[in-house]
Image (tube, rainbow, N blue to C red; front, side, top):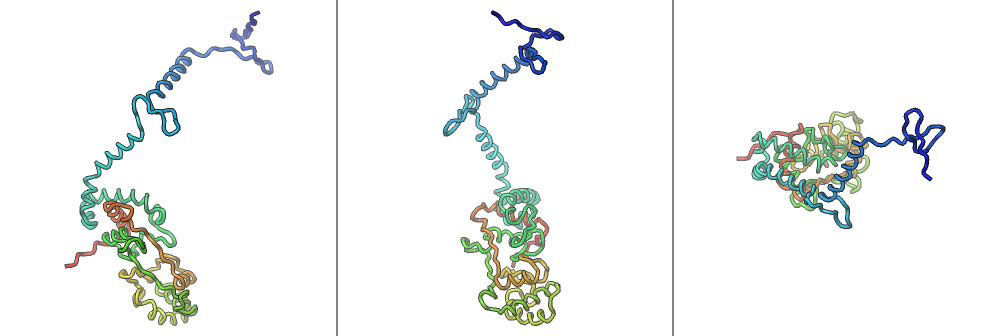
Length: 297
């Protein structure tokens, strides 16, 4: 026996027979346009999975009849970008850093390329803004252990700092005056006080006066008689209030007693020469770069 179809008294629409709390569910058909759209999307989805890569397999995916590959597209775009950059990259590779700064086109290109390379390779230590942190130099200021000219920066980047895998690396080692027994704790306290006064900081006057002699006998050979440092040794300038490991009395004592020595990779082991030159140009442009050193006659 056929089920009697009940209709809603108000709308005249058949009901589904379901009722909740006196509310009956109407059996309203979907609009034709909605149904046709839905059927169209189903057909489109099936066609798409046939034409394009879609179904994952164990080691790959169905390739699709059209042979489309987003990976191949990206590779083609990368190759096109490299081809567009090749002329400038070849010029940068053939030029020295000082000459790049004299060519407006190459300079603009190198700064942009250096900024991109910096974000990939350097921000982990020097920070996104190149301001550094404790133990990692600030590249925005004008304090340079090995020189801030474009060529000096390039050499530092290329060969690294205390990077033992490169024979040409920048290298300097400050003696461990405390752990090696070169100075007594009392002498370390005295010379630390004197070092603070070199930078115009407050320190115990008697300690600093005694530390002046300790400095002259043990530190001046690298840092200079006035404490202004020496780039031949990568010896820091002690008069400019820029401290890599901190400038309090205790921090200075710790660095003298058991110095920490930072390491930077030799980027020639990881990057091509054109990229290193672009990095040198970018770092030089950050604000603390010095003028190019005139060639010796």
